[in-house]
Image (cartoon, rainbow, N blue to C red; front, side, top):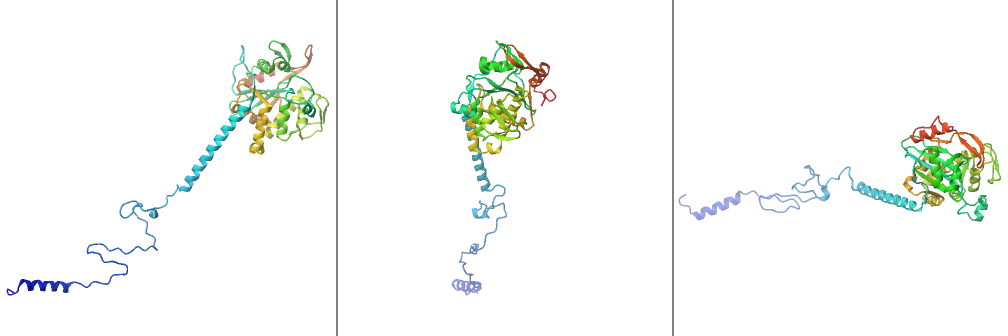
Length: 395
């Protein structure tokens, strides 16, 4: 031992170490030789989909998962969010179009000075009260159109139809009250005379004031239509259904119709509401006027007209040319009118005539209609307080 040299010992240690090492096994295909201590990883097989991480969607290294490894969000798919934005844009466009249409229609309205304040004017009542006037003005009718409609050549304008429409504030029934043109009432500054004389004496302002004083109801809205506007609206909707109970013939109005429901052209419809030569004269006429107005509004508010832009826009243009409203009226004030009239025509409202006591012949006025003051007062007081009128009127 002591005779060994260091050099020989080192050589022997080196040989022993080499001989003691295990021979290395051959590496699998695709593996590479790495230094000791480093982890060997098999190559990624692209044909095998990687398993989803179990730590909430994060990669093994702790970072954010790759797009291919991220789970799809459930409940809020990107496609639904895109559709939501598209629907929102479409709704916005529709709102803008409706507002624009309303402004356009409002600019087309014909306005007249009809309502004004004065001492002793009735106080405002709940709901909205309309004075609807059909005048016999031939303005806008040329010679051929007058002959076609059979209106005659009378100059000026008189109130042929007068109706008071009360639209309740809540969910009550709307009420339409016809005021016969021959009603014998006080006219401010002109004594007592027929109601339609107020229109002849002072136009819409005096007529509105006369109705307010006679009924005690403050008029909120005024609407007037002449012969030309009447005929234009009937033509625009393709005619209106009328249902005379008996055969009717009135040469003065140009009317000759058989009993039963039928589609009336503008000429026949105009003659139908103007005819006065019947058993009760003016009282029969106001019933036909109510029937016609209900039939017209019912046709105008059908889906076939409202949802058809070609018909509805054309009707809007015709309607704004056909009627005149008070100075303070705007298109948004008029929206409830056709639906109130439709409710009345469908039985969801009340259509009546002011209670009448009878008729008489008065010097300077001729044949007049006299109101039943007690029943008429009860009717108008109920409307003033937005109360039901059932039982107070004949329907």
